[in-house]
Amino acid sequence: MVEVEFNYNKKVIKIRCNENEKMKDICFKFAIKEDLDLDDINFYYLNNKLNEELSFIQCANNEDKEKKKIIIYVKDNSN
Image 1 (cartoon, rainbow, N blue to C red):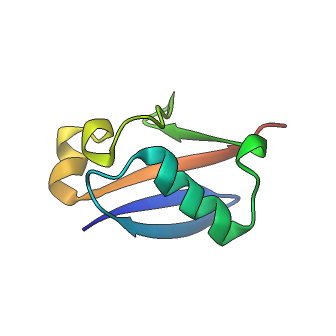
Image 2: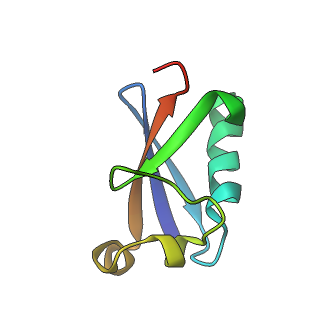
Image 3: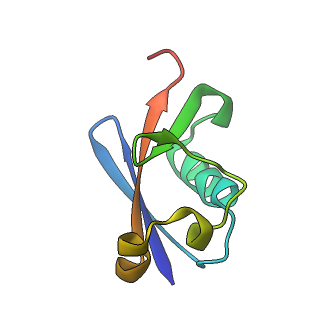
């Protein structure tokens, strides 16, 4: 298991998942948990817009793969 930490509005929400799980599915779990519409938010990893078609293992850099954790910043589309 790996962990994706979402930072949204100064709040940290952790989602545990499989390393082969697609980022879009992990982001969907976050949105459900926070009662958010995916059309209203964007996800960023390492200051780049997240490619949600990649799996956790494809997305994570080597350091994050070793830690089995990545940090995703969530921003409202209005910002």
